[in-house]
Length: 192
Image 1 (cartoon, rainbow, N blue to C red):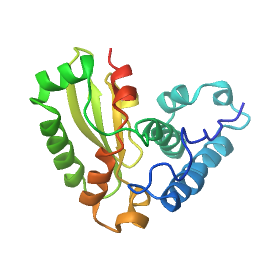
Image 2 (cartoon, one colour):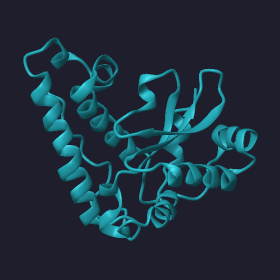
Image 3 (cartoon, helix red, strand yellow):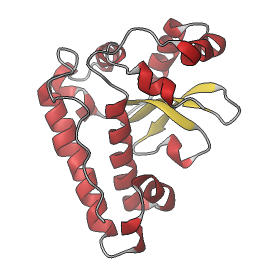
Image 4 (cartoon, rainbow, N blue to C red):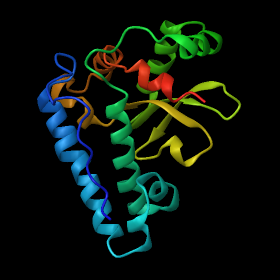
């Protein structure tokens, strides 16, 4: 069964003014679509065709891994954003962030520092390690914490297609917009 390109969880213009419909069209409709199409072409007629996307990511390597991981990373990223989001986390997530980072502002600062330090394309993540600790990690290209022991909680796409149409090469301005859209309810629901 082929992997489907998931619909965005909101209308394509819902993240404006922070991320425009043109950016979502390019990002979701072109780049993520290309990853899903490449993945389906590679798994057609193989035993992988019957696996869930997460399983394909964990079982693959090379070009197949790149396509599968990018398809999964993007689908996850869209869930991390919401038009009526931003603000501050609450509940258990807020408590965990306070224990680990001091407060949400310090989390943002550390996350931004890591995202800005990543040269080239990749992802910035907030993850939960198996011992419960939270951490910020970056991955290059399509790499993802999904292949390790940590649980991805929040993803920020650092590929240029995620922000170039809106912010050109100003990743810092993109990160400011990103924080105004973070879906803390989604992030908190992933805590273990």
